[in-house]
Length: 167
Length: 412
Image 1 (cartoon, rainbow over the protein chains, first blue to last red):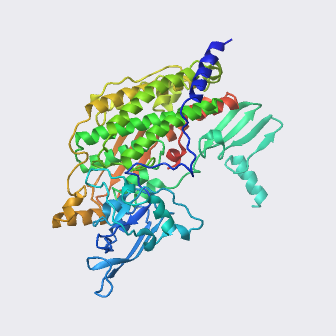
Image 2: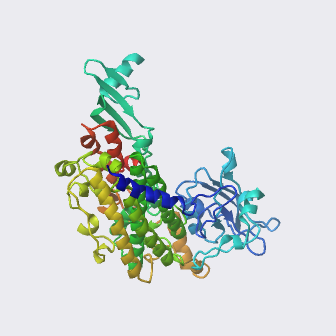
Image 3: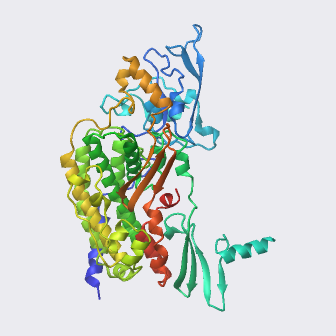
């Protein structure tokens, strides 16, 4: 009989029983992704509160999945949203189409569009997952490692959990 | 034609959705295995003709995962198409990106800086490891060794974490682009790779302990699904399957690309051609990957990680606030993309499954005219009937697992 070989295999299994558990109790224990993780988008603001987005539609052009819709409009002295001439009147990201490739973030010339590490994106209907501008825009400016070659953990400047409940 | 006649005709041709029948005269049973069957590794459908438990005829029917990705590439510009090709063979995403990027590099006739080349090799070798780990797990599972699946996926998770650390995503990364790689390696990549290397060299020992001499595993794999050298050559096998059948072929050594000519590694070749030989070849390959990774980590040069030609690469973000030139280039690249000179090339790399080729045609525009991918899973799947016919149904499961087909790559 080939008992010794079977016992060698069993030894491996028994050794692994006493190893650290690899699974997490998900809703209670949440995994913190790496700083580069490409999750849900946010639209950033300038420190003075104006929107960084200038409605140039470069993100929509760079998107391979056609997930972004931008409709720009002119700023007027009465209603000023962004420092330049134009702002995004309608800004939608369709998370049913988004593939999280990050090309839109690379395309954005004003660093308005950024990606957070939030990965819990789910909804109960299709309309739920088309995020509009008021869901995407945030109030506190955040710093991104892009181009600075430094990694800032995103939670240092805003709370991810809060972001999820805000909408 | 009535619907009953239509079903009859489909059955006769053997292509219908409804073809389960028993022929009492010949004592043959026609049986559909798949497309939703846990042992067919995705949506592979096999039309089997059984004599008792012996497989008399086996016809793979593919196309259930066809999403038109090659065609989709023609709608994107050259840079965006990377996000499509990475989804073809989803367990070897970096190999897919690498072969496409190499094809575009050659059409553009540009140089990739040494650091970019090393990062490309680093990522695709780690990818080979993680892909073989999935194969190890599923091969074990199909042979009844459930723990093998747990261990394989557990270690794959570590490599997926490294992918996330470097590229931002765990799968379908879109990280290797024409001209180099998208972003530089992050701080702390070296200790991360070191720990993967240390972990993996210990764990591969453990995998071998678990399965290599296990009598049940040997019984089910040795002498099962034999593919002779002639058959393998005739049907265009490549990768571990060809090497297990005695064909000494590895593009990393025979047609070195990127920096493989500077690295030393062995190419395992066995002559048995059975499931066990393919198991052994892949196990040795994982060790060789570790060797390659060690040399890549030691030899990683500094400098640029992608070609910094402003016509090809968006300018650094800090430039956008200062230089009008940079803004123009940025807008041009993001709206239109770069143009690639007219021409056609075929590039091939050694993916975990074999020769992965990319035949790219450019008509001089900003989008590919045609991107055809020669996927190793597709070619290797042809070896299933010769390997399975004459064996038992249980052996067929072992053969499918050892061919390791990825249906995303087969159907594209």
